Length: 65
Image (cartoon, rainbow, N blue to C red; front, top):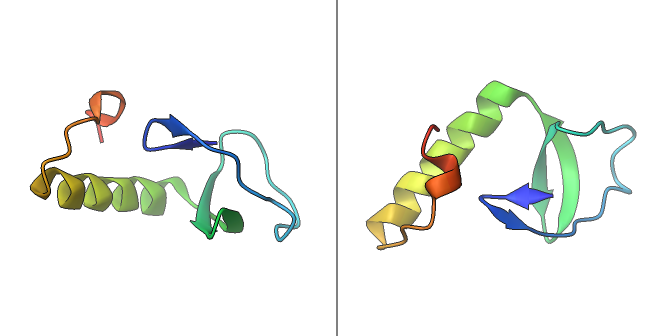
């Protein structure tokens, strides 16, 4: 899965059904809920804002969010 530009492995056994390119909520490397695109993009934007305040600038892939 792509997590803010990093590729990570997460479990999907807690989900009944998931399709490629769907957004999921993850806790402790386990996908726990499929979420809609609007919620996902809002969350990405908030994470980006918080991390940039801490000086992180590795978001070239997410510049359009």
